[in-house]
Length: 141
Image (cartoon, rainbow, N blue to C red; front, side, top):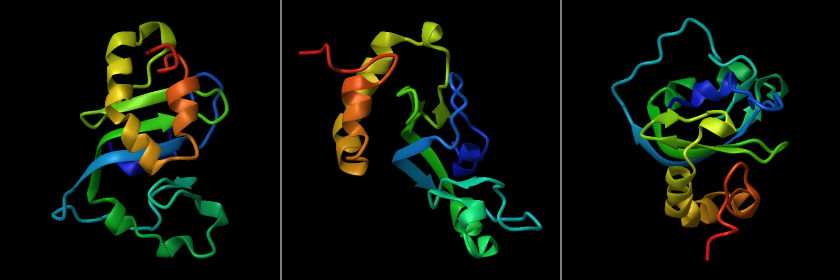
């Protein structure tokens, strides 16, 4: 998944924007060149720098060239309003409705990234791990 996708994603349940991105594993592609005629590429939100573009004093100085070279392999997208979390697995964000999500697979994913979440996003790790919707680790022993 590219960072710039966060500029268009909102929570499917309550339309919260922007969502919080926690990058656990990413791969650099130095061969990628930024070729868009203007900067910044994103219109509302820069997830690479975690800021709203309209609040930045000089948005044309944002590091779009740098951001464009990264691919997020593993991560979590979190809605701070409703508490839902969505995994990014093998570069694909899985933002499905609750009823179409695979509880067993997603709980295994959550267990596998729990320590990374605690290290990378200590402010929201417990919210995701213990209270996250639709599944969390609070019932696991």
